[in-house]
Length: 256
Image (cartoon, rainbow, N blue to C red; front, top):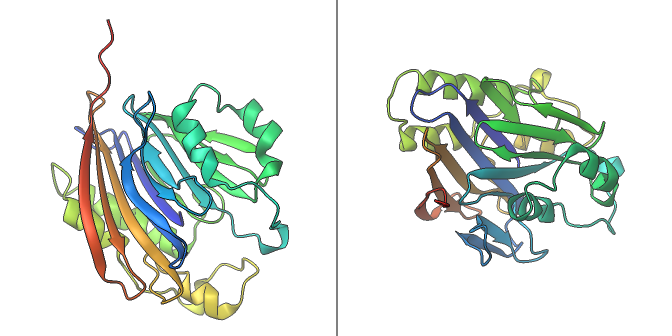
């Protein structure tokens, strides 16, 4: 996952709205979003190479999403797959705490993990072992820290804020349009994250189009005041062509 935009407690009918793009090498085998077996009814895509995921929800309303932190000097080839953290957070939500992450984060390459239940969302940043609860409002998470002011983070946040102020209910097509913006930042605005300038330029757009590496899917999550979750996923190939769109609805379990 490369970028997430979160609107928390902003919309009167949907206290949680998440728009997310997953950026990855196009040759990496992937299964589209689907319900995984298990008691928590996890809905997520699957990385068929390592077995984890980048974004998902479960029937109880828990959310988990992961972005890689762009720190090439700290990458280790023998690290565990970061995608397993998403599935762990959805299958064992009570286990994922700051203490657990503090103890285990060094097993993984640098990451941000967004997790929590409905409007109680947290972001863990592994580089400084910090955990922050998201406050009501708009937030962006990409390959740095929560709410860094990278050009695409600021641009997407403004676009989401403007869109949600105009329509009720949220316009899914308009949200998808925000996430397919290919405009790149000026060189003077680019962050310096330790990669070549050509790649800084390419990765500065919300939607990344490249035949080898780019945006593989866009996901929209809407949670209403009753805890019902709507999940929309659109998938793309290396030429930016739409490979399919699907929609799921999850209702919280009713217990006696």
